[in-house]
Length: 320
Ligand code: AHR
Image 1 (cartoon, rainbow, N blue to C red):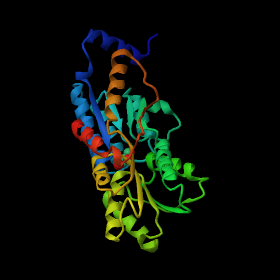
Image 2 (image 1 turned 135 degrees about the vertical axis):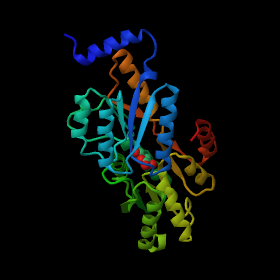
Image 3 (image 1 turned 90 degrees about the vertical axis):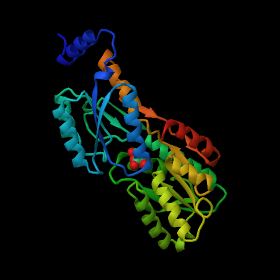
């Protein structure tokens, strides 16, 4: 006996008789907000990728609040969308609403962040980077850069508290420097992934660390906080990228502009095109019943100042 969902898929495939279903699909996307340049790019790329495929995309901005995301998901369920995309602001607390989506046979796709649930059948797939690897790549760059120094005190600007990306980026960085004798993380605090908070926290680190003179490097969980830190370092009369090294994550255009001015040293790529692979997986599932892998992993390439001009051009051509 065919399960109702399999039967529905088979019938709708027959009805479509070879024509693509994509232009009949409606997807609800619960987006976190617009805390960073990367986030704004992710939203705009999602809209472009939906339009390319003839998919109707409804975006709901949660303004950094999980409760708003849960409300949005419930509203998408009530509207009977074909799929729900969620960029989960924090890792925990998702089971009840994911179970509701499952009860209505609405597949959920996680974008760029993951959730902590016992039952991973509550979502279809997640499109995200290996966030532990991102932290490792950043740390390996630093280990090599300061290998000839006796000591390097690092200050860390963490992302949103409780988010999978902040937890895992920290884990990857800490794991890599654990046995490295000359590197120590002396201060760590959340800058909430925003430029303004990144600057504010960096100012307090500078005050506490001999007006910045005892800081060797900044590990920032994203580029926007790094840009805030650059501002704080300059205002303290120091040269970012020289007196204080900076490594961050995202690879947004503004960090490449800062690299071209010699104000930052390295960034790890996080593609803002999380929705494209999710749309493709959704279409294959709806048209052919193909279940995607549980995790679709995006690249974590390290970019240095020598790559900045080329990367800026690439981003410009991609429209972000
Ligand atoms: O979840 C991805 C992170 O969220 C990005 O690194 C950061 O810029 C964003 O706000």
